[in-house]
Image (cartoon, rainbow, N blue to C red):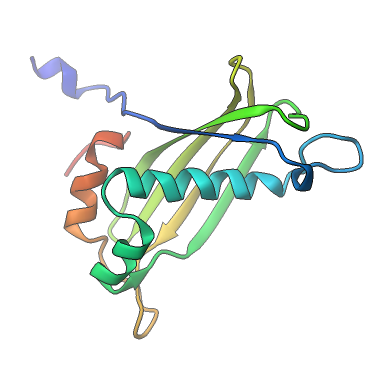
Amino acid sequence: GMNHEITKFPQRFRVREYVRWGDIDQAGIICYGAYVRFFEIAETEFFRAVGFPYSKLFEQFDFWLPRVQLHFDFRRPALLDDLLEVEIWVGRIGQSSLRLEFCVRKVEGEITAEGYEVVVAIARKNFQSIPVPAELVTALEPYRADSQG
């Protein structure tokens, strides 16, 4: 019934990646900046999974999606060779922006970091913001946490 529309529990896309040698600092734990790499892998594979690998995405819509915000909350340290699972979903779709949500866990379940990024759709020719293409909005629909419309 209509009650299902009140709270949305979006699908989450998941990818797994190891903490590698280049990710750790002298203390032997993951360096904060390494999470950018994990977010990027998740984002790349997420777009591929919804039918828009970057090679197609940027050509088809003649745009870029630069990051304008990046936020992390660090919960627990991750160590060398820990296998991490990164979940990604869409927090919000604005007129010309996407907010992508991330949750990083050890495969045993413990959250190591959470965060989000905001990307903005800009035309390649002049770097001016443009509306998020309708086709992309449709592809992202199952993963949206915000209400539609």
